[in-house]
Image (cartoon, rainbow, N blue to C red; front, top):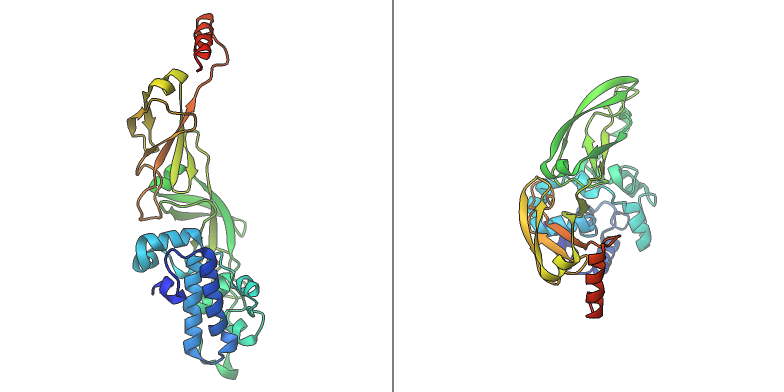
Length: 311
């Protein structure tokens, strides 16, 4: 499906225009206004999925980069709706949320966003089981831990074995860290959470990602930034500097005459991956001009001469 076509907007539409388009369609296809109409319910699912992606700058960037088919190979529906609180969004629009009606509450799994919203897309919406139904066994509690990964692991991806304590017992869990992972993202390990109290499925384990600091590089989205210092004379006359990338490749980079403090030089394609299968961002070399704290007599005389010349 084409998300832009679903919402009736263009690729270069502003976030405000995308929001207005979704609001108009949400009012039209809201389940409370179309009870029992499966086509309207299906349409509401589709436009909500489209808005969940196009209202998120990073997901929209990935969708625009890869297109619909490849995007869905990289993002599951759980990924698409993670952090998308439909209840809150609909309240902003003045539309009833999950708490407004039994029909909507049931179809959304009792929630306005998060896992309940995902269940809306994965469970059948028609029919019932009548008076012969029995309560489903309660799922175990989901668990969240924090995991710190290095920039090198973000670059190459990695597989880790971590030790957790579950019910007081140490447990080793293997986790794959995908290339391009960002701080704040969560890795889901299905069935590795708390046990159910009445024989149901265990909960899930979520590993919240933090990125370790690096002495040589800082991260700016999918780009990396490193700093190199040059002298005032090198800034005036130009020079060559050696730059080492995150994967330890070395390049000789020319600094043009007249380069100013905080100028940036770009090494294309030596940043971090844009998603697990995407291309790489760039490496930027931030130039700093060194200012000595102490001067020799000779240096002081030279600088005084430069000052007299207007430098």
